[in-house]
Image 1: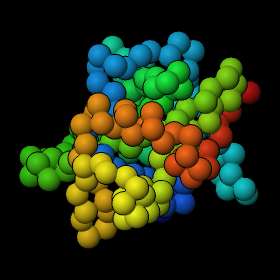
Image 2: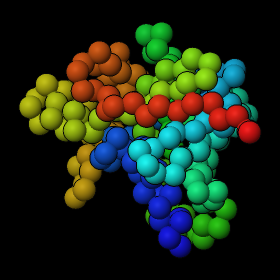
Image 3: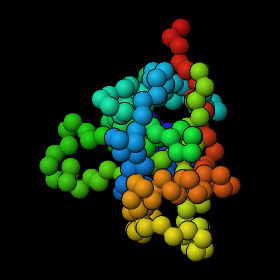
Length: 193
């Protein structure tokens, strides 16, 4: 209903920094590359400008994977996301992808392709900043010939098809470039009152 649509809209704002986040077919980190981040689990809240707050919960799963759920207005958004953390050049990043829904039927499931999106994460105690790779930067860099990375272009999106190794090299080479990341979303540790 209306609440679910509002939560989806808020997620798109969160994930896209005002636009669609840069999708990739391959992960930034594999199970071998991923790492656990003790203490990052739990509930986080992002206060909006007059909007209802967005809640993000991170729960550790097996290995280095975490489950992320989003909620707002007292309702949990349907579906969950898998997050894998890892480090490149000492900085913390996450690789986010949707987890399959429990009620996906066979035909729908065959047509839903999980893609990955990447973000730089800065975390200190009670504050978590998430800055997604900016697809506008990626589009401009590819079109201007300054970036040679495997990708495919669809009607709506440019989808990276590069290997995990090449994606990590992309981060190494360009993480310090202006506008490579969108503006960070700032969350604070949620404490029950």
